[in-house]
Length: 236
Image (cartoon, rainbow, N blue to C red; front, side, top):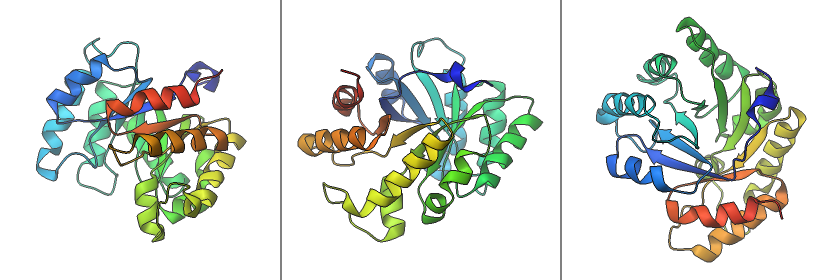
């Protein structure tokens, strides 16, 4: 796949829980560039199979036409990861997001699983551990099917045992490391979410900071955050 075929805005990248029908319906009307149908963190273990079935049905429809449709699968070390990939190979989204990527081997393992199911898909690598940051350049160069690095800043901060003040100074080195790795391999790089839904000023500040650092967009956890991201990452 030629990466030039994947050029598109990824300013606002909204997580949508895969088992939440109300959120799925609401997402058809939002102004986000991309939707991440989530099968991982937002879905409880006993709802994983139902969420997977729901999202594969969603992908057969045209109700999300105009969005880049991404599915975040479970890790391949979990009981659900390989089943997620097999199901998505049959009803492919625009891209698959792999969580907790810590090295090129994670990319290769997912690609091999998809190839066994007879499909080749674009991948996004979510980096949310110290090892993932250390390996960021190797991850970014792992495959031409990789189109973006995505930072999981909340889990990363937890794993680093650091705080997340508004200036996000403790995360500055990991953020710039991910940006450097992405740019070396002509990938997009997406910043993590602002978790406080009631902090509009903080959201605007982190969006501006992300854009100034060189990120292409930001993952979001609620539709009310879309406007701030679209404004910050739009070209003037």
